[in-house]
Image: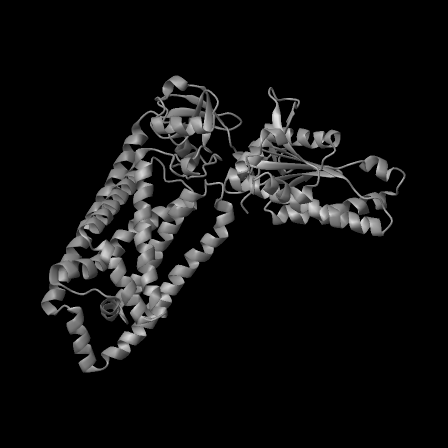
Length: 564
C-alpha cells in the first residue's frame, strides 16, 4: 500500500505531502467551527488547542512551506501541460485550485495578518461578527466549499490506486459530505448567537474590546493589504496565462511527431508532449488511474518502435515499472515525451466498453485461498433426479457459505460440488486468520447440516478443505462482456492440491505452513505432514485437521492460539 501511494517523482511526493498538511489544517479548521453545535465553550477550547500548534514558529513554518510548495508545484504542473483536453475531474481540480488564492487571500488578511499586525484576537466570534449578513459571508462559504472540494478530489485521486480504497470509499463520501455540512450549520448557529449578542451596545463594546476589533484605521490598513494582494494574485495569473499561450504557440510552429497506436489511430503530436497527453488531445482511449501523475502504472505502454526517440526513464519511472515487474520495452505514457515517431501498445486499453479499461486491471496481492470439495458426490447422487441433485447442493452451500462470509471471505467460484473462496483483507496476516476462522466455521456448519441429514434418514456429507496463502492475481479475465472477476496464481493451484490430499489422509482440512505462519501459529514440525505436490519443487509442510470444527482447540493444545 505504502509503495503505491508514495510512488512518483520527488515533485509528486512533495505535492502530496504538502497537500496532506494543508488538508489536515483545513479539516481541523472546519471541525473547529462545527464544534459550535456542541457549545461555544467547546469551540473556544478547540480553537485554543489548534492555535497552540499552528501559531507557533514551527507550526507557521510548516504551514507556510506546505502552502508555498503546493502552490508552486501545482502551478508548474498547469504550466507544463501540453494539452487542455483532459477528464472533467481534472478541469474541476485545476479550476478550483486557481480560484482558491483569490478567495483565500481576504480570509488570511483579516485573520492572520490582522492578528500579527494589529493584535486582533481572531476567535470565532470576531470572524462571524465581521462577515455575518454581508457578501463576505457568502464569499467565505464559497471558499469553504471550493477548498474542501479541491482537497477531496486530490485525496480521491491519490488514494484510488490503493487496493483497500473501494471498500473505504462509502465511508469517505459520508465524511466529506458531513464535515462541510456541519461547518455551515455551525457558522449559521454562531452567526445568530453573535448577532443577538451584539444588539446590546454594552455587550458589543465589551466583545469588541476583548477581540481587539479593528478601528477605522485598522480596517483601512487591512483593506489596503487586501487590494494589493488581489493585484499581485491577478498579475501572477495573467503571467501564468501568458506563459501557457506562448508555450502553445511555440508548440504549434514546431514540427510534430507521429505516434502510432497498435490497434488504434496514427496521430500527430507536439514534440516533448507526453504520450498520455497526446492520447487525451486526440481522443484516444487511454487508461490513467492516477490522472497521469506517475503514481500508478495503468497508463503504461510497450514501445514497439521508436525507442531511440525517447529519453531514458527517470528513477521514479523505473521504480514504478519494477514494482509491477513490467516487461522489457515498457514505459509510462505519462512520463515519456517522444522527439520522433514511436509505435506503442497500450497495456490497459478500452476495447469498446468504457468500463472495461478500469475494471479489468489486474491486481496482485498476498491472500489466503480455501478450496472445498464434497466427498463422494457422484456416487451419492447416482440415479437421483436432477431436482434432487440441485436441491442437495443448494442446501449444502446454504449451510457452509455463511461461515465463510462471516469470517471475511467471498466465494470466487462454485465448482460443481465444491467452491473456491478468497479472503481479501488489509494484510496477509488478517487474510490468513480469516481463512482459519472460516475453516472452523465450515466445520461447525457441516456438523449441523449432517445432523439434519441424519434426522431425515440420509447419509452424512464428508468434505475436504485445502488452505494456502501466497501471491495471486485478481482481475476480470475473459472475452469482453463475458469476463467475471476471478483470481489465478500458484497459490490457487496449491490450495486445490492440498484439498485433494485430504481424502488420502482422512482429514477434513489441510492448512499449509505459509497460512499458519501468517496467522501467527508456528506449529511444531512433528505435528505437520510434508506433502509433495505437483508443480512444487519442494515439500510443503501442512497441518492435518481431522475435525475442522475443533481447529482452535487443536491449535490451542499446540500452544498456538490464533488472534481473533
